[in-house]
Length: 341
Image (cartoon, rainbow, N blue to C red; front, side, top):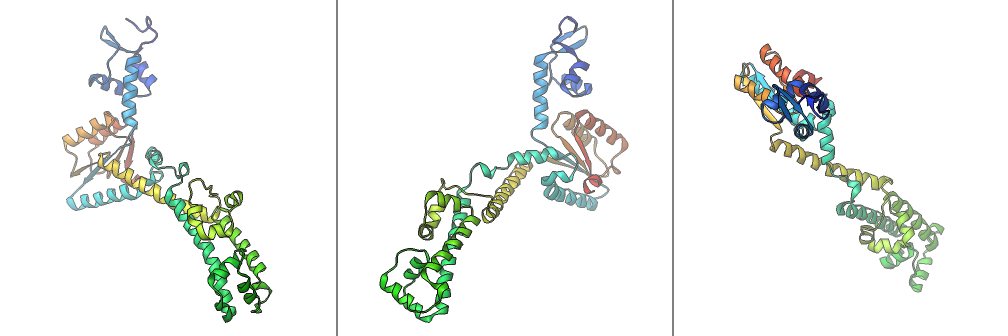
């Protein structure tokens, strides 16, 4: 059967172009039994939809997950130890910020996909922490007013704290206690009405800063409600929060950073534990077995990037063979000097 007789079939060259890989890769996969030609007539292979599906599966394995092969070659053991330390530092400090090295953008995208998006579901801890901070800030402002009254007039200490809280919050107070308070001659700024008005303005500022004011207003909550039950009211799952406000945004960003940081560390550890970071070490030069492992691993699609500690020590022949495999596999070739620039 010829390709002219069946338009759905391609020869190896056409099939390679269709799949977006080199002819060498297609022939290598056929020789290893990874791809089965649709038709083999007259010594020539043709490929159809089933072959294309096999290639797509192989390409998916190549791209997911991202994997790094480190080749550390040195003149002696001391130099090898230095190169090992340099690689560990690179792996720890640079790879999670892959934009610093050409070719690691795919790794960065993979990490981003692994990070939970905090916007999708505000965590209970964030709600609780934010509610606690907002409630504490408001309660502190009320007690600071009471302290200011005590400092201004010692006789005010004859009245119970409960009276001052009710007065400052604009609530009903005991008539006898109120008459006693008015007899202290504290000035107009300390009048019950002025204290309640000033507290209301401070309450608005604090709750706005923490992203709660609009929700509190909508639900008809009083200052007393928030003062006495702020944490439970504000931490409710159905309480909307405006995270565009400064204090709310700051706490949100802090927790989001912590969550994402833990996810990133976990993902990097997961990659390392699964062997996606593989290190090959050699003194003097690579052995034939190591060269074969590197070349085969590259052609098999086990790795997407290769980090070389040095070009100088490896023989030109080895570099040529590995370089050819890298070009065929379309992987990233990172050399130590390039990574440090």
